[in-house]
Image 1 (tube, helix red, strand yellow):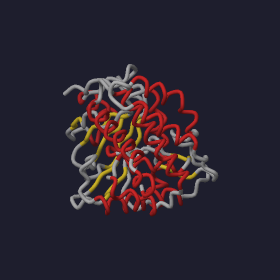
Image 2 (image 1 turned 90 degrees about the vertical axis):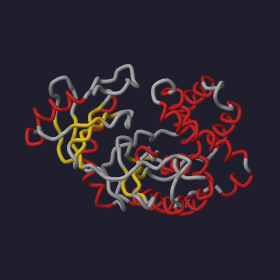
Image 3 (image 1 turned 60 degrees about the vertical axis):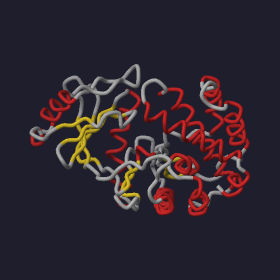
Image 4 (image 1 turned 30 degrees about the vertical axis):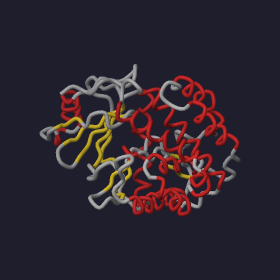
Length: 306
């Protein structure tokens, strides 16, 4: 089976046959295991299941190449300090065949992505996400890399306004601009950077059959930054009725919550603009997040309590 439709102009073409050759060349003891594409589950990395217990992770684009080495170093250090499973790499390989970049093999983690807007156990998931976010913040930051989203919100202003203009036919551009401007007015993060995942979206979370958080995956964006970045999960994953509980559990003050709202909006806008024609699942989630943010802003109760 060929790889799914490319999402990026500089995307590496990967298919199951290539993955089989790569595994055989670098890890012959796994060469007999079946290889199965997981489709467009990752926008920066292609994922292929290898037998029942493993997964191969290959950068799709040049910008994701450094993530392989970063994850191989840091996930082993972070894993023991986190309350849920994370995908600790088992092996790393260099370029092979038609793959010019390093790639890794990780342990397969069971679970399903939560469905945006249809979370089975929202109150429990809110508690679990808050536990994960606060555990990340407590990890010693010494020597940690900067997170992918470590810049102040103001540095995203030009890109966000361009996206709002480009999406004026599908979103309420005026309302989106108002949410964005409120986020820009919020005081900046006053403390030292802390560990953040920086991409707590449904595709990077796994829940068990009880609806509890069982694993957090894809740490390519992780590093040190403003803890408000991880608040995006309040709109990407959690429904409105439990956002206040999540906010209280992570001790987000008004400024942090406003920055978190700005981060969620900026990420969703840029995703919707970029993936509009290439990734229906991603754009569907982005549209949902934008609607939730605008509804949250429009509701007096939402402004006070969520």
